[in-house]
View 1 (cartoon, rainbow, N blue to C red):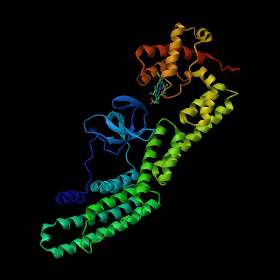
View 2 (view 1 turned 90 degrees about the horizontal axis):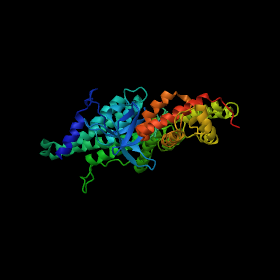
View 3 (view 1 turned 180 degrees about the vertical axis):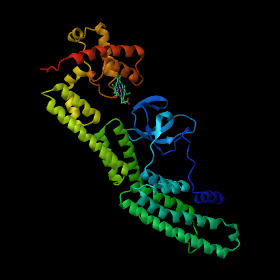
View 4 (view 1 turned 45 degrees about the vertical axis):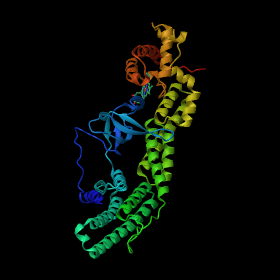
Length: 436
Ligand code: HEC
């Protein structure tokens, strides 16, 4: 099998780093983690799909050099992954940390990309936090790769073919070395699984199996004395399921956090950590989600204690709380309870009192239309803000920056802006009256 040997031989010999793309023409590899560097709209099949706030992270599926948009993975509620795209200049690479290098290194071994595996693991050993783990994985992987290369080399050595005895002896030696190295590798996978690094354990184990079938293929009549590949001590299917669940939980959690659904995010981290108890990304996101939830709970308590004494203050705390954590149940309940007062501050109805207080020269029907558009088109993705949180001119620019997302035309924009100008005036001048 010269083609196989050639491939594996090349992988095993060349261990230098792959060429890095230059700054000017960035392009991303599958599996890279990228971050949205400015507000953007995700495209699904070329159509606007969802707003992506600055800072949201995605995993790259594909990015062809010079072909523009980067194809990213987006996980839907039902669990299906859809391909969405963003322009390449709206993204930046999230530099992989020691853990990401380690995981990708072991995944590269799983996929039999040995050169990448070696390079990534070597990089991971430079990381203070993951140095020890990366070094021990590296120390177990290297003999596996080396002995595999030797077996294939002996098999392909044409000069040795004329010396069957010597060949058989060399082959047996190399096979024995490979089998011993795999056995030690298997111990490492058990250790990794026991320490809660499910994904590392799975990828390492799968890599050993794949390489094992190349180096010691199952054949009907194996020559007597040919060593057997040590069998796995782990339930690989179960590991595979857990590793997949952990990876999905990370993506789901990232998406939930992007829209500040922290309660949901926290539950994803818990689900993921049950599958992979030591997964660093999940632990970090769990800590973050818990901190945000505590913050929102403080806002909730402030809103509650101000509810009777100082309603505007309570509404502000409510708004801030929901911006921190959009799905905290007690805040949502309070929002319902205060919906009347909230409406007065976010989208007051066009009543005679409204008209006389604002002295608006705009026709009432047109104001009403503006309110309709505002309360229907601008509430699809988020709550309405308090009108006195920004000036009339700032509202105008917000409407224009959101117009594409809300799918409203210039005329509709103008109508919304007229309503907001009047309503903003009303809300700003209204003394904090108790609504009794
Ligand atoms: C398709 C979803 C979507 C629609 C529809 C939408 N927005 Fe937004 N809006 C967002 C997202 C996402 C953000 C979060 C920040 C960002 O990415 O710009 C946001 C943020 C905002 C903010 C806060 C900006 C800041 O800097 O804090 C305001 C104000 C706002 N939107 C107003 C509106 C108005 C007015 C409309 C209707 C014309 C509207 N939005 C319609 C998605 C939407």
